[in-house]
Amino acid sequence: MAMTTAINWADSSWNPWEGCTKAGAGCANCYAEKRDARMLTETVIHWGARAPRRVMADSNWRKPLSWNLKAVKAGNRPRVFPSLCDPFDLEAPLGQRDRHWGLIRATPNLDWLLLTKRPVNIRKMLPKDWGTGYSNVWLGVTVADRKSLPWLDILCDIPAVVRFVSFEPLLEDLGTIRLKGIDWCIIGGESGTGARVFDMAWTASIVAQCYEQGSAPWVKQLGTHPVDMGRKVKLNGAGADMEAWPEELSDLKIRALPSARNIAA
Image (cartoon, rainbow, N blue to C red):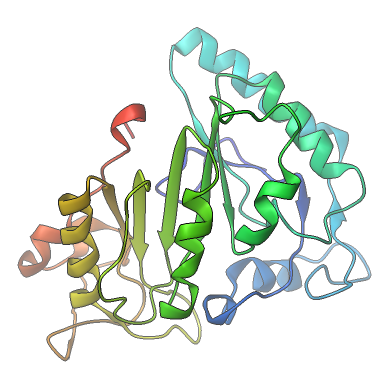
């Protein structure tokens, strides 16, 4: 697991285990599942119901401890994202979730961004000393379509220092969204083989609602098939590179952090 990551809204990626089960339309082209099949080092895959998750080596568990020490010396707060698992997966390897909570407590200078597609599991899987939330944990849910919009209400009912939503891959216009209690909104299209269309109007609507309701918008990427006013957007590079976006999309070149954690990206 790397101290750096290609995910532009995090500083590092790190995972307590690897593997998951698809949980909705947003998972159809899961990059982590494809990565697992491509880089398989064991005799079994780690994706799907009842598939064994890959338990990480002790050397992996020591990495965040060193990152925490570096953060103390540098005076910053790196954002760490578990990118190859769902922290609130019912099929997490035995004992590994509690081990992860212990590591989070031992790294107070790292901000842990815990993102799930299983918000109904969050409350019962929080540590007993959670209280009003750990000061270094941001809780988030992925919302890809209207069907998953109720997950926002579940998230907002759980105490946390920062609550965030990943509208990625955004698959349709979500209409009016209730963002009260949501501090941060990540928005993005789908990339890679089989990527679905991503309409700029959907993004513009969410960004406008962020400004109206006090959430910080972060437009991550335009994906592989961005469209604007019915036409394919011509990119001069990768969809995550703002410099590659055409001038007419300049209003969407926004990457803001929650005001409570407004640390330079």
